[in-house]
Length: 257
Length: 364
Image 1 (cartoon, rainbow over the protein chains, first blue to last red):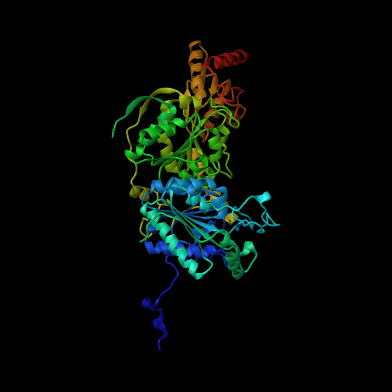
Image 2: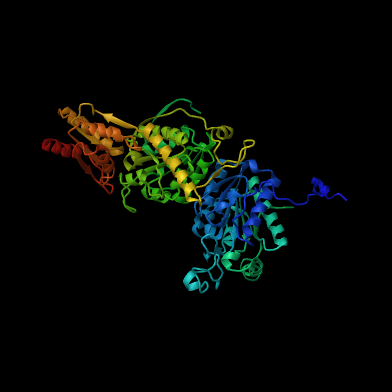
């Protein structure tokens, strides 16, 4: 029996996406970012659009997304990625323009840019990683931190009188005339990863077809910030995050059939 | 589309809008603020997206505007924004990103009185903001100071050339006087916008998709975790600034050849001071004007040469003496230097300068 033939092309059913390079990722074990990066690279590859794709990185853990996916990138200032995206889409209307942002970047310091870009209806995609905490700076409270959840700046748990309420920015986005597709996904299970992949593909298609703004929220884990093992994080996400941030489409004006 | 020059009676702000279209800019992104709103208004009225294909967008804030310029410039497009004083303060966030990432872009600053909300009257109190920057890190912006409507128009062309040549943010530092006053203006013929293919050829560094076969991905980033790498990037930037200092200094000498007293002034103050020079020359006083056209790089050598020769210098500004410091430094104490100025949006008349310069001459 010849084992060498197993590696022949017709037998390959799964491989690293062509647009992902070999750079070691800086993400912690169990982090959702690496999974979503892989999905983005896979979809761009599948769509064959890397020649006309510009990605915009946030400030936060995904600040180095440009190190891992081999496309053109712009590293934006904290929260400003959507403004960059608006300009790029108008200057390069046939391009695929997407931002990749975390909760602090998108739903706190960049709230104005996020809402205004989505409301202008620029045909761009925003991929929004919501892990309810500031990862890069070491586990501070985020706009999406759940009530009672402990972080280094709400060490006794988030309280409404001290910190206000967790922001469901995707729900706001769904009310805007400019958005054509707003969805909330997760990557904590294989099934959810497959659904998230489909959602990102849908959003990218919308952007290429000029249908309006698309927002794909991905409820994600931060095992380092949450101080849990990757497995505990996935369970905590299912038990605590998903009841407050339920999965599914919040708005879809595009007929998929 | 007209291929010839066209002569119109325009405000300085309107001239900038016309010039941006005619010099082949790809996009304007701006937010309303007095006294510069005519730039966005004129562009909206002229609808260049239907003719040259130039994009015009009213942004949600000056913070957004500057990020739009950063991204647009990064993709190799010729883009500009405009604002006034407090709006330019908001833009300071991202100007350093443009400087270190070597992103071309034009920022038009039409100054009003400050600090804070201040007034909507003309002022030059943002000299420090333009020349020394409010952003972080060791960086410069190339600063051009127009003193007429015609020069406002011409400088849009010059700024485009300089920002693409040096891959740097360029600022046109106008003010409420130059922006609002109307003068005859000869507009240039239309320069066609570059095609996307031309941009890709001319700007192989730009982040506009991997359109060129075999090209490695381009990334615009100001972030380095290794401080030694960041120092190297800083050194490369400073080396570029040295070359800009050697090649791009511009200044106008007005009757300085035989002058005993030289006024140093830029922008609208220089325009007023020119009246003083004319009037005092008629009365036999040997007086001249040095007008820095580039505020950074500053005409240090012009100042030093004059300071070594003249009896005294007078700096005239619509602020509390901001450029004065640069003139003093450049002059190396070779001659006495006085200052005449107003601030907070109060302008100056030729009569006032004449009166005060006359007093200085009689003392000297």
